[in-house]
Picture (tube, helix red, strand yellow):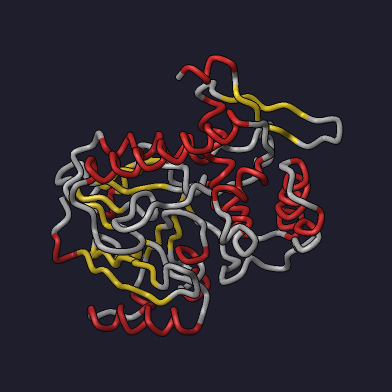
Length: 326
């Protein structure tokens, strides 16, 4: 059981559309910070001030746990003492280490796949060929790997849940005694999290399918008796099951819209993206294409559409015959 007076929420400014991120200082056997905020001076000053208002300094923090690798949750790792424990899922590692070989692979993977998904050369040419550093992130990795089913004795014995979808490194922390959970970006009170495309890591033959993973993670937490879910953005969620139902219904509605497009004519992922997001796809191509491909993965997994390759190597989605009558 986690005493509520031992949980302290700190809201930090971040240079993203969401504007802020929530991190949590928890007074367990080890003084623990869940997530960190971006690697910017504004975020750091706000974190220092927030921790100090609770009665501590950054140097007092003994353990940092990452819900996932995105910079607004991991970017400030470098400001903590060398002996601080840094915990997270193993899939955080390449994004935190930022070895040049991985950054090059990451860029080239998306460039090559953009072509196969039908993105015109004009847009592909604007994509960076190499990255020196992921913006607003750090170069400090984990000291300890945690994974599904692990229990953290030094933090009120919370259980680790592996909840991929928004990121393949995503975890949640769940207290079985009282139903309190820390959910990162898994389920947010005001907006839907984006299931983001990631390349396969070393030894993997296929890329992860984020929307399918995300739906499974949402369905999983909906089945748990969670009383309060502390979130990475916005207010805590108390009706987890009800909000999950809303999110899944909205996602199904969008998938039906995509299916109707493809029933009318075979389309590339980029063509679907243009139709789904006509006003923003040019400025937010990576984000909107991720969302689009997630919907296409979902429909393909259900057997409503199939993927064909044209002679020029571009992938085209077509409706299966049985889907017309559904």
